[in-house]
Image 1 (cartoon, rainbow, N blue to C red):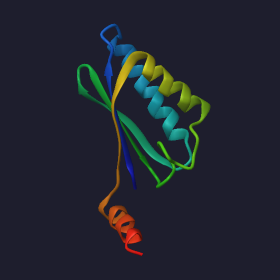
Image 2 (image 1 turned 180 degrees about the horizontal axis):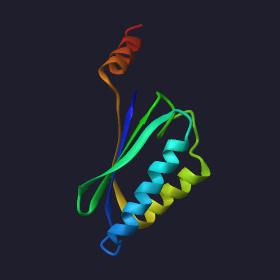
Image 3 (image 1 turned 90 degrees about the vertical axis):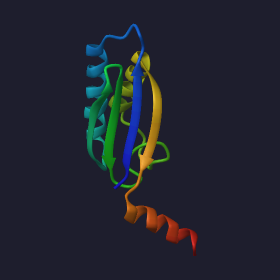
Length: 106
C-alpha cells in the first residue's frame, strides 16, 4: 500500500494549538475518503508536523483517481493558511515497486 507523507512547517505567527488542530482535521478528513486506510500526524519537531496517510493504490494524493472531498479540501487550505508545505512524497512498498518495474519491461 502506498504511504503518502506530507510535512508542514508552521509560520512564526501560528500557534502550535491551531497547527495541531488543523493537522488533526486533515487526518480525520483523509480517513473519510474511500480507499484511505489510516491517516495520522506526528510532530517532527516543535515547529513541524508530518502527516502520514496510508491508502490503497490510486485512492489518495496527486494523480489519484479520487478528488478530495470538500472537507479534505478545506482541511488542506486550512493547513496552507497556518504552515508552509515542505515535503509531499508517496512511498510504495517493495512489492508494488517491483510490480511497477515489471510493467516497464513489457
